Structure formats: C-alpha cells, structure tokens
Image 1 (cartoon, rainbow, N blue to C red):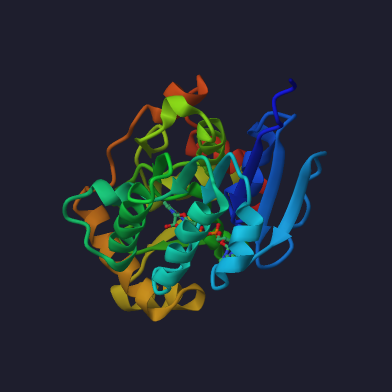
Image 2: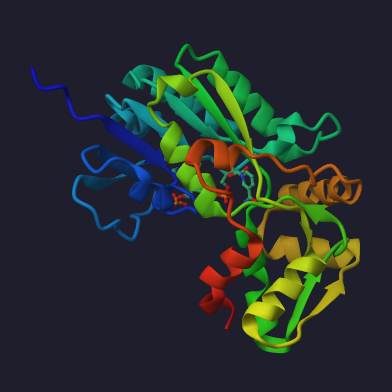
Length: 286
Ligand SMILES: NC(=O)c1ccc[n+]([C@@H]2O[C@H](COP(=O)([O-])OP(=O)(O)OC[C@H]3O[C@@H](n4cnc5c(N)ncnc54)[C@H](OP(=O)(O)O)[C@@H]3O)[C@@H](O)[C@H]2O)c1
C-alpha cells in the first residue's frame, strides 16, 4: 500500500516564521498555512491557505484536521483563550505532533514579565495535552532591526534603550529552518531547543554592522525609558510595551547574551551572522 502523504499545518501564515518554513519542508508533503487574513501565496504545489481564527475553536478544528504535525504561533499574551483554543482544537482534530514557537526567556529564572509567563503557561498546556510536542525557544529575532529602517532612511540614526547591552539574536530564517526540520520527526518528540545567533550583539554593534553594509555612517542614540515606551506603544499594547521595558532590564543585566549551537546541530550549518542577515535584507534599509 502507498503510505499517505504527510499533512503539515503551519499557523501564522502572515507572520515572520511560517512563510519561511515552506521551502524547508519536503516537496511531497501537503502543507496548510493558516491565519485570519489570506497569506500572500507561497508558490509551491501542494500548499494551500485556510482562514481560521484563534477565537473560533471550530475554525481551528477544521484547519488542523488530520495534521501529522502542527506549527503553533500565537502572539497575544493578553488573550490566553487563543492558546487554550489552539490546544483544544489540536486534540479534537487528531494532530500528531505540535512544534510550538516559544521563547528563550522561559529558561531565565529571573524572567517574570507578561510575555515570558504567558509562554511558560502555553508550554505547560501543550505538555499536558497528550500530543507529542517539541518546543522552539529563540532569542530575539534579528528582524527587530527593521524597526530602525525609517530612522536610517530619514536621518542615519538608530535608537535603543541600553544600546550597549547584548542579545544573542537569531535570524528568523534560522528559526524557520530549524522548526521545519523538527516537524513530524519523532526523534525530536518531547524535546526543547534554545536557539540563538552565533554571537551576542548590542544595538550599538548592530548599527556599526548596518553602517558597513549600507556604506555610510550611522549614529546609535540612547533612548530614555519614557522614549522607549513611547516607541513600543506605536506597535504594541500598553501591556506588551511594559513587558518589553522589563525585558530590556534583564538584557542590561546580561541575561540574554549566552549563545547555543542548536542551529548548527539541527541544520548542519552555522547560524546566520547579523552581518549576513543585514546583507540579505539590505534593500529594506536603503
Ligand atoms: N519577535 C521576537 O523577537 C521573538 C523572539 C522569540 C519568540 N517570539 C515568539 O514568536 C511568536 C510570534 O511573534 P510575532 O509577534 O513576531 O508574530 P508574527 O510573526 O507577527 O505572527 C503572528 C501570526 O499570528 C496570526 N494571528 C494573530 N491573531 C490570530 C487569530 N486571532 N487567529 C488566527 N491567526 C492569528 C497572524 O495572522 P493574521 O493577523 O493575519 O491573522 C500572524 O500570521 C510569539 O509567540 C513570540 O513570543 C518572538
């Protein structure tokens, strides 16, 4: 008998990670991408988009039905019912394996901000679901630097609270490739992976790299906590802005600078440097 074609479901179709995962999945797999809004189409046969909403459990059950593996991305710590619905639907839909996009901070003893506590509860819920699981715990994505693009274009500046504190940030492309390799692989069941880039860098050092890549000087300016809060509030809820400020203090204390070799162990190639990531995304800053 011909074995059935594996079915992989990726939530977060319009987010940073899921669209980058598709090219790392075996070409014969059936892939379903899900989000509330249609994704801008991944050009590969066997890939479809299904609309669903974390608020509507039935829409999730329908989207997850018979998935051999499910990649879970949720992004609102103030809406824990989203995470409860996702796990309930995964159980009801008969999902075979959950790969959960979590965060490195869950391992930091001193981390008690809103986002970290939410991710800890999410992990616990998945571990209690009865479905085989794998946790992916990345440090900050290098793509946060894209938030500087208007400042760089407008006045050759970057901005950060604690600009000399370091973070072992990771390329979203690396998070995606590792996550894709874990999906449906029983060798990774019941394991958690902390992912970082190859070195810890400060905002000041990232600015110097960007200046080199763009071929012109940039000034990295220090923000006061009030200014940092105002900038976060443009993109995030008040609760998230507060959590990010608390998290920045942990970074200042050195909690985010340790690197791991997980990307290399899982993909067989070194983790992407910030310099390479900046070169690959040069057009976004120019
Ligand atoms: N950013 C970092 O540096 C970083 C580092 C470590 C861990 N993480 C973790 O990575 C995760 C992703 O974070 P992000 O903010 O960067 O997310 P993101 O890439 O913007 O992705 C969020 C996705 O969730 C979908 N979504 C949101 N609400 C939904 C709903 N009600 N129903 C269905 N889909 C919904 C969005 O699609 P639609 O809105 O189109 O529906 C989008 O595709 C978070 O869990 C975060 O803690 C992030």
